[in-house]
Amino acid sequence: MYKPLPDSLTIKQSGINGLGLFADQAIKQATNLGMSHVQIGEEILRTPLGGFINHANEGNVIKVRFYDEVYKTKWNLVTVKDIKEGEELTVRYTFYNI
Image (cartoon, one colour):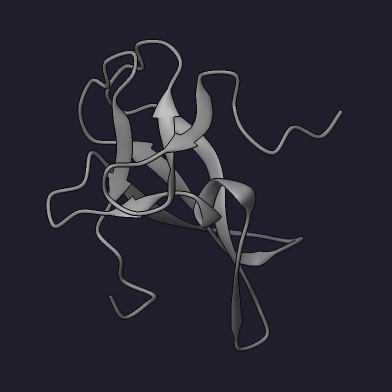
């Protein structure tokens, strides 16, 4: 069954901008949260996970590039520190101008 977000995340009003991704529970450092972006041809598309994460210069997650036979190039969000329950997840934007 397709789930747009992992069980550990929810979308809520953000103090940064609009809606954001928030931890519903504590998440350990180095947790792979799933695919945030996929490249199809020259276009990079966001998944729901990538569509709701806000920017921070010092994000608590990073985008890690993977290659596979289906999507060719995709990016997953991986935590770079322990995330507390209720904490907003952020990433340093590299695909978009802010």
